[in-house]
Length: 303
Image (cartoon, rainbow, N blue to C red; front, side, top):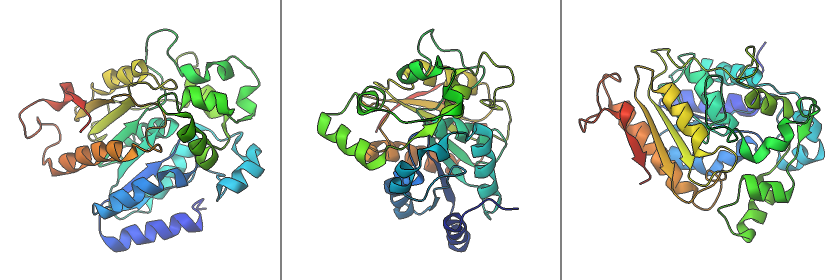
């Protein structure tokens, strides 16, 4: 039985009718699909067919989410990945996949199943085998990981926690606006699955990094990100570059975890679009890029 919502079915139908390359945007913890609205329009104007699937159980609106935060409590990483794969399975064309934070991890999980033509993982969550520097794992949410009750709860960040973990590179006015506009509760179990990825051999936070059908991958990270510091993104890159496909990483200067929703989102979106368009032009994705540089070894910079 399908778990797709009516909204998702409309997006699937529109993408299939357009005959354009679909772009599937996967949100992370503490956000809803609407957090991708600017990106969806940006990629639509660039000639793509955007889709913003839910996590299972996502309320339709921010207001509904805040009125009933408990609905987020028990959503697991596998449930999100499986639902995303179901949406992709209804598409006529293999999509580009983009994800932010936990969504960046899920994007890599789905790409590892061979379901993406190209993938962009932004500030991606930890998966098993990623070994960053001690103390850097999900730095901004560390207190939740030591609480044994977290896995059964829906976790809502306080404004102070949001400022530290998401908006440390922003002024107070923008921080307040983003918190009031976008922030909702997040799944405690999904948070624990990432935080304990290297302690639990049965964790769902696993990525098939060596699947040759993974396709090209770009990892983007904000230089000042407190929730997913550079050490995590770089460790993910080092793990992923073992793949035969193109693997790149970009550090966005002076940006924190809110880089997909803050006032500078367009710079990040353009960086992602440039990678996607270059990747889709490649005839043989295992060969060096057109500029003659082996992009599996290239560290990019924001444009």
